[in-house]
Image (cartoon, rainbow, N blue to C red; front, top):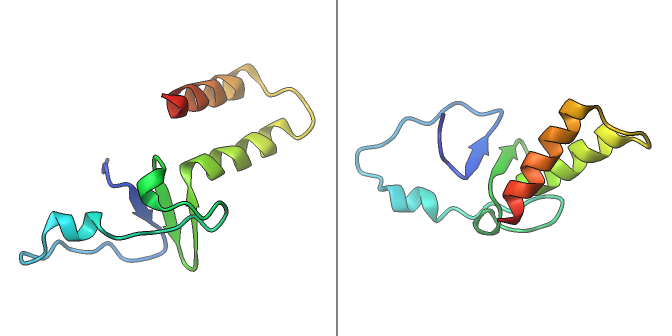
Length: 89
């Protein structure tokens, strides 16, 4: 699995070019369409066609969908606890 901070969806995978450096890829700023933070201020960013979402906004959305005015299952709560515990560090 890749350790890239920006994961692109809906596009063909790019082949690495011999004359491009890794620092060029690191300098790409991608902003979350929900909170407007750049990929340099979040754990991960998912880049889709015309929309981006950071890992934090994705987890907020997942948490909202899981909770939906009721208690989550034990498994879902473990996932939420693991993410939010890790994100705070």
